[in-house]
Image (cartoon, rainbow, N blue to C red; front, side):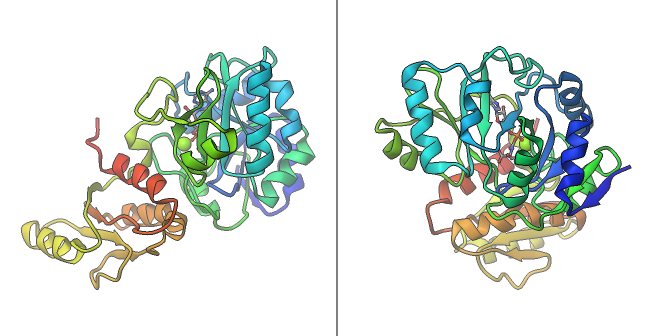
Length: 323
Ligand code: TXA
Ligand code: MG
């Protein structure tokens, strides 16, 4: 049975019993378990249907706990300190060499670990109350888009998780930026609300663009960011004509659209032109399109603001050919 609650203490108790607790962060909802208990972590993989070997991010209440999970040389410790000071709590995951105390199952058998202090009052209350590290992937079934509402978690995992803490819609709406501090040069593994340029400024060295390196961050398959509908990208300018053409060409299917403008077409979702506002509504729109049985989804990206690159990354993956 799944308990849906706003009472964080219920989640803290469940984590202590080794149970699964879905909780809001500023990015998306996470599916948490005690990161130091292999059997609790194994349940995350089981209920998500996630293949083993996909490492989990460990969430911490404060940056002071990094030393427990990581094994850092002097320079990496300095770099983590700079990033933590500027961006934590916040939508940034830092991948570093792990200490032997991190359970192998948590990190998918890797020599590294992803760490993050989330910027959400409920997540921080949960992490402080629990005290330890909480391993948490996004709280969706494997292959579905990440949840940005508690009801998305219940749709995907209701009956399979012990507790869902409802903290309302998540603010950022797409997953955290991931930066790897393992070799001599920092590498961006996943773009997010914190940009590559910002990271480089704070570190004082350029951050390489490591996207496409599937083996570096396994589990970043295109299908993770895709609805069931097939997706085609269009520009905002072309969107009205593209929708009309798709409807005319394929009258037997349901054509939907997501765009930063009103398309006067049903079903369609109008999202803000600014990428931060667009990101906040995107996954909800993708899930609604699926629920309405949309077969073909035409999507026009946002046009303004620093998060355009991160949103276009997710949309490009959603539109990529499926396996
Ligand atoms: O915003 C977020 O990051 C959300 C919230 C819940 O914190 N979490 C999230 O987790 O998106 P997940 O598991 O859905 O995606 C984490 C990504 C995976 O692609 C995984 O491969 C990568 O992070 N990752 C985690 N640990 C890693 C490591 N040690 N080395 C390389 N990649 C890692
Ligand atoms: Mg995920």
